[in-house]
Length: 240
Length: 249
Image: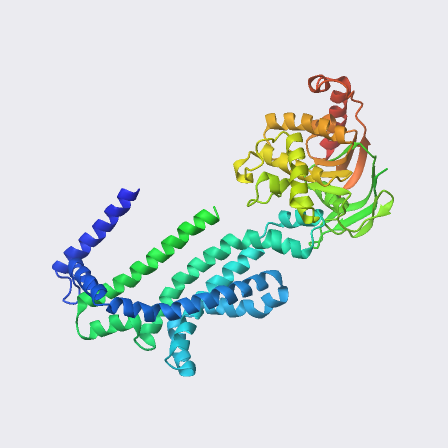
């Protein structure tokens, strides 16, 4: 399994190298050039500096979503009136094309950190909220009846049955939310103002330093993939 | 009479009339069966007795007092076991006590005792997913026994258990319940199971569910399980019930 995974990476990077040397386009560098550019950006610290800026709104947005989003999802799952009030908002948010809404955010909140955090939240919140909500709602009815048959109180029902049952789905929601957050932060940094990794991409593109531009793109893809992979491992261990 | 059902009616929101004017009494210390084809409302009636679903009319009396919800004198064994998948056998068995606020140490002690009684000693720290259907149902039964209810209500407890396990479990169940002098109300659609286990069998007719006959099998319980299954009284009871039920299917 591990060997196969390595082989598939080798094949992918090999094809990239070939396509770059062909060349497919003057703007498409081979893998080796992008890799060298990545090493250079790591050495001169520009990549680290960019990520310190990029990860800030991402982390803020995800933490806010985790606290408020899970809270909302649980509230919606437990209470019909909270559900009635907020379910439509999250269904609309889930369906809305975010790239179209982000310019609207900049009208209201400008081009600073707030807008970028909001972009992350708008992408990540629906999936976090909906997963928590569904986790709560999908509690097996027989477990609830079991709790009632032993005269469990509503509080015990929630604490000992509903929440532990939903925990797995809530965590899955967080992982998917983080995936959406990565999309959100890149869109925000490309559409609002180029900062952080978005700046590295747009700047290197404008000065035609394509190896660096591809290195920046590949780095954020790799970071997202690794982060999500680790979270999935954690999820399997905690909620088998 | 420990449990009495008087004129109980139930119509679901969908308009389906599940039970019409059901009158039944369940003698103390005996095992009574609700038997009938699927759709006769037997599980509905059992859950009404348990106080888990509301009735549209009539009364359920326990020890002469009307009840309107679940109570500590009744414990339920679920058809799908209703075990917490994230809790091990020990915690699942002690869960009824946990809900009552019994201290961890005390409820573990009680749970261990009943785990041993249902034959699951050594499985205390397994999780439901690691157990067979028969073992899960034993966990469900042990949980119902820990709370020391006088009345045990069982909803088709053997339906998801394979045939060999089923027979062994039925025999164990009889021993256990007789030993603890429980009053048991048991739902099944198996005629043999009803005739083998019961002191009293209430036959329900379908749509709407009504009591069509009460049969008291003349089976000598002092005999061994294999002898009972060849016993004249047992075989006659099976025939008699089949004679009544065949008109419904």
